[in-house]
Length: 239
Image 1: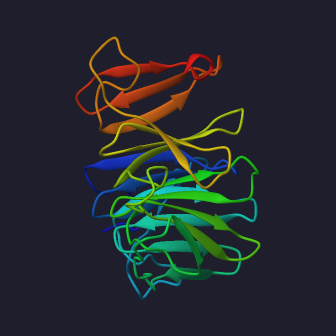
Image 2: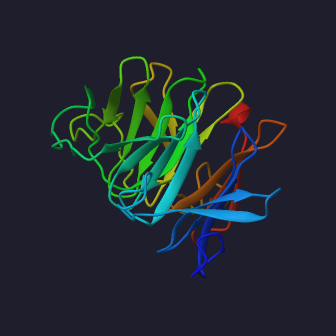
């Protein structure tokens, strides 16, 4: 099989990096780096005989930081690739989940499958949403994760499970969408959360607990795509 040809059927996402590279994630076939000028595909998968390879060939999230590190959320663990040095860091040491706390700092993630990666408002830190847990905020200066948990004794702790979307707005507000609870918003203290749970049509809240997509338009209106409740419009000014 030609290593520079495209293969696979189910495309999970297509993303263009800051450097103009187009990345295509294909189920069971890894990550494709597209060179439009050469009209070739470079395949990055889980083949350990290659110089650069992934932990798993199912890729769900991708982000390129200012140092041109490529953050890759695979099915089994988070990878960070630097193509200039040829180094790949694998965040394989899963942290034990602790009860009775809202958050904690750690060098480990409490999840394996990172499905969403978004740059924070400071342009440095990275929000990471897990399909198999909650959210973490990575700080490259300290190489630490701020991992958020659900404290049953605190209603302002992070409730959602299995993240599907993270939206960082122009006004530095952060919204989260997951498979339950409805719309979630980061509090002003950056450690607590406010919720807009699913309600009946015409009332304040989302029409479905399961949120797949959160998008901010040029007028700062938040659009929310749900699993079975259609499209919701949220105006932060009149919340």
